[in-house]
Length: 104
Image (cartoon, rainbow, N blue to C red; front, side, top):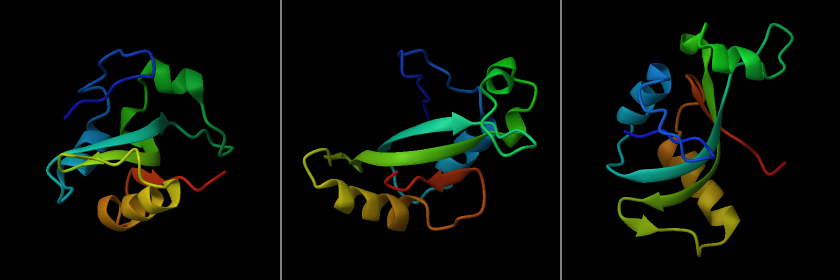
């Protein structure tokens, strides 16, 4: 299980709740494009709180796209198909720390 920032920093181990959700997934290998988010009391993303690591257990993953699945490169598939695969195969439960992000 690996988590990388957009700048390539390895944050594996930083957000155990996201890693635990990923490890419960029935797929063996996958690459998701998403963002770890910590929501403040007002429901707005708290960027400073995310980086301060004070509330790692409340971090959520908003998944935008699935790029690879069980060894298959999905990037050439249309986005709507990848979104369907993301929603149906990787995130069957809307409860928990991982959420599929819509089109915008």
